[in-house]
Structures are given as C-alpha cells and as structure tokens.
Image 1 (tube, rainbow, N blue to C red):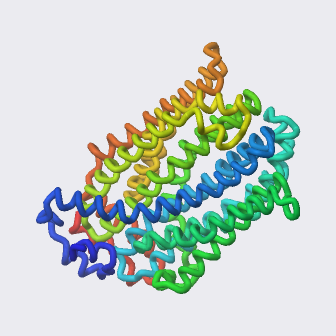
Image 2 (image 1 turned 30 degrees about the vertical axis):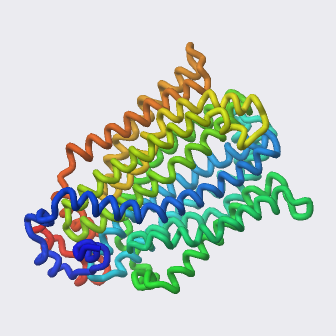
Length: 504
C-alpha cells in the first residue's frame, strides 16, 4: 500500500501537526488515474466483507420468510406485515439515528488526537436508539385491534400481533449491534461484523427449522420471530466480545454520562438522517401496506418482491457504508481530492452492480415466487411485478450507496429535503392514484409510482454530488462539526475550529 494510503487510515495526527502537513494543493501530485485505482481497490476490498455482512444479516429475514411461507398464505402475509411494521416503527428510525455515527465517528478517528472521541459519539448513538424504542412497546401491545381497524382480517391481525410482541424482545440488541458495527467500521475494521454474523447464520438457519417445523420443539408461526430474537442477542454479544478483545477497544474510552453534554449536536444530524431514511424506506413500506388492501395473494406476492429488494439492496448499501468511512476519514485528514474521487468511483461501481442485478431479476422473474410458496397465483403475480422492480432496482441501490456519501459530508438534511418531494409529493400520490383511481392498476400502479419516486430521488442526489459539492468546503465543515461535538469533553483536546481554518 502507498505510504499516503496507509497513513490515511491509521494515523492519528494532533490538531497542530495536521494543519502543518496540509498544503493548498493537497494531493495534486497524485495523478487522477492513480487516485482512481487506489480508491477502486480500497472500496472493493473493504466492501466485500461489508457486503457479506449485509447479505448474511438480510438472509436471516429471508430464511424466516422462506420457512413461514410454507405454513400458508395468511402466515406469509402476517409475517410480511409484521416485518413492514418493524421496519417502519423500529428499524427505520433507529438505523437513521445510527447512520449519523458514520458522519462523526469516521472523521473523529483521523481528525482527533484522542481516539476515544469515536467511543464518545458511539455512546450518544446507543442512548439515542434506546430512547427511541420506548414508544414502540405500547404500540405493539395494542396492535391487533388497530390492524383490524385498518382493514386487516382477524386472522392476519392476530398472527401479526404475535409476531411483533415476540420480535420486540430482540429489538435492543439489534440496534445496539448496528451502533457497534459503525464503531468498528470507523476504525477501518470492516470484517468484524462479517465474522460475527457468519458464526450466527448457521445457528439461525438451524433454529428456523427447530423452532418452526421440528415435531419436538417446533412452535409454528411463533418460532419465526423467536429465532430472530435469539440471533439478535447472539450478534450483539459476539461483536461486543470482538471489541473487548481487539485493538478496537482503545477507541471506546469507557462509558461516561458526559456524552450527554453534546448529544444535541449528534441529534442535529441524527434526526435529519432518520428523516431521510424515513422518506424513502417509509414509501416502500407504504406500498407494502397498500398491496395488503388487495388481498392476501397481493400481500404474499409483495413479500416475495420485497425479499428480492432486500437482497439486491445490500451490496450497494455496503459500498455506501464503506464509502462513508473512506470519505469521512479523508475529510478528517483534510484530503478533499481523495474524498471526491472516492465518491465518484463508488458511484461508478454501484451502477455496474445495479445493472447486473436488474438483468438477473428480469431473466428469472418467473421462478422467484416459487422459492417462497407453491401457490400459483402468488408466483404469477410476483412474475408480473418483477419487471417493474428490475427497472427501478439499479436506482434504488444507488440511493443506498449515495446515502453513504451524503452521511460522510453531514448532508442528511439535504437528503431528506430531496427525498420528501420525490416520494411523498410525487411517487406515492401517483402510485395510489394508479392503484385505486380510475386506471385500477392495483399493485402494478403502486410500483409505477414507486419507480418514479426512486429514479427522481437518485438523479437529484447525483446531480448535487457531481455539480454542487465544494470538497474543500466540506473539509472545513467536517472539522467545525467535530469541534462543536467534542467541545464538552477534555476541552483542551478537541479539534480546534480556528486551527483548522487554514485548510479550507
């Protein structure tokens, strides 16, 4: 590895030495071709373990849905609805809050001489996601009658309520795992979560049989969420042990209630981060709920399609997370040119992967539904919907990747301001008009509207990155943000806004 590349990830310069090392030209002596090769190699090697981690973690739901699908259409519809509610009420806001750590932790790791600033930000994230879980408790207790009021059948409502109440037992460890995953990734340790999930995955697969289908221990439908609860606790415990017995522990610094002093600076980015995710993720979940209005077959087919969505989304999302780490580390060191090339290379790689996935989904559209169910109606509807998803999948994956770039720059508020009109003022109204209005396209109409929203949002974000971002300004904004967020801890050691002013 080139000397500059090694120092980019492993050095921890003091505030003074970092400014002294910076020059107006930054890394202008490195040719564009060399930068592209370096960034492509780093992103590919770093994204592979992250992609495996994301895919394996997503496979937990895939395995559970596969097992539940064989129990019946109502069970598959109830589990799909339960996953939708979990995503919308728990995971969507929690992951949105956690994603703010990619802004703070990655830059803090390289910009600050005190590595425990990474742990300080992580502690804020853990507190934020814990508080966010409290309202979900009451909702899940009384969810059954609410679902009936919203048009679900009694059978689906009861099954869904059971699913949610059991699943909630594993809610805290899964969001805490996401916090710790960002903690390790910010330090350039991309493989930690992969190793943990790889060890948990076979246990999850075995439990899916043991707790759902086993004649001796099988619980039927209730076994699916219980399997997820067990896996969530195992993942959290595994990553906690990894941190405790690895070099990553040095960045923790011990838990301190002082992290509450600057938590509002964390929320300044965490809330827009959650809003950005809510605008897009919430639109997808609303389409799932909308499909339930057309019966169990439509709901079951939608569950099959969403399994494909989750599967193909993971690789570009992993690249986005790796890119967020790379850009955040680069901005923390004042290397704005390298940060810019990282963003451009990541987008190019994302398009290649997205196009390949879209082609494969279109080619095998008639076979996908039968993976989950033997019901011919469900499989045929799945095949009918798949071309619409295949057309939009590339841009959906790009949104996941570009979100990482936006988080690295602290542009969550901008992302939310672009997502809201794309999904909620354009795509969703168009989709529901085509589904329920005079065209009467039902689920197909929902997907047409969703495609319009996804493509609009993706193009808007890419236009901003290519034509509006001033990367030298982003360095100063990054260091100013770190200075504000760490001002209350060891006030003499936090990055100085004034001392970094010369960089920009």
